[in-house]
Image 1 (spheres, one colour):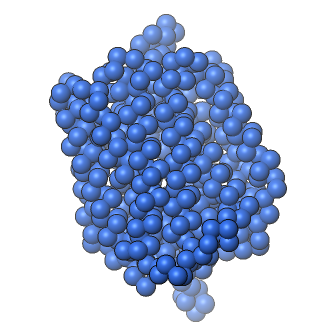
Image 2: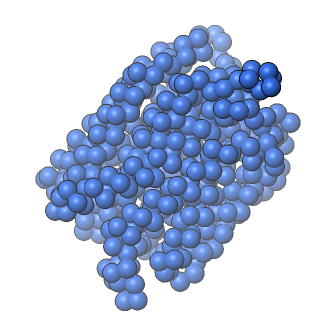
Image 3: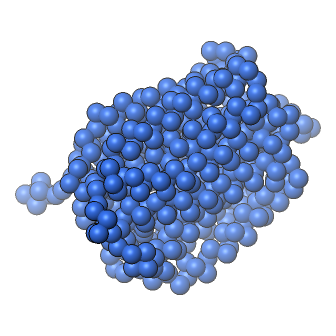
Length: 411
């Protein structure tokens, strides 16, 4: 009994960071739901629909790399405050794009949103830094689990935008992105971030070859491939359902705005809900088997996408896609956290975010042109090939006992 009472627990700051990530990711779910659609409306073609959101991913890519390096010098909290402020700016610029009905204004709006989201992504590593040892995996997973809030808060705001002003549906949605960012900024401002492990002196940093091991590289690539496939098919699904709603004779009118929002909502739930028990699953079956299972789930999602499209088929594919993302991206981040020496964590995490965002950018930017020129089934086939190419890398993965099984403590 006494031993149970003395078990270490996650500090309040980790729970606050998890809440911040959950609320903060709502900006991303709003953008996923309306960004590509609004791009198609303003540009007049699906082929150009995803280019503004492509700018967003490029900003995430370089933002994660730059912000992580600045955190090594100035500490996590000051840089988080700067990065999160871009979300407020993104919402304001998005409102201008809707007000003036100008496609090009979406580019700076999503550029700012990407910088904001790169800071949101680094919250999971910030949470892991608040604790030591086995609790770090719990902290990282809990923070990602906070994303379940995004599944409800983001679509909830989209529903509200449609009620508040159907005529200015997109403008109000971008306004909610700015509101979400402001809430997260205030939450982080009042959250105590551990200072004694924030900064690193330059002479303490470890050279790149000392942490660029096979395990680290495969951990990064696994998360990157999982995110790429998820971004490609999730972005494409929103556009595909919109197209079927308008043009498909069998399903015309079956994929209205609320149906599309509902589908994305449960997809996001499937992405983040498993994160709460991810360390326990990893402790039971090992990180390597968990990543292989994630890849297998992505294969199943792609296979379902090759079948004739229907409402039920789209819902099932998106839910399995979310589970597959969770079982690749989550364990990939844990491997990066565990394989890298503490003194090199900022550089290693920055390179991880850069690589993941690069792959995500390929999926996000490519979704619109691929859907316009190749079709939904071809997109799923391309994603299937990418996942199959990952499997040999996972086969040769050799994790130590500390990396292949997570020792879970109560949180």
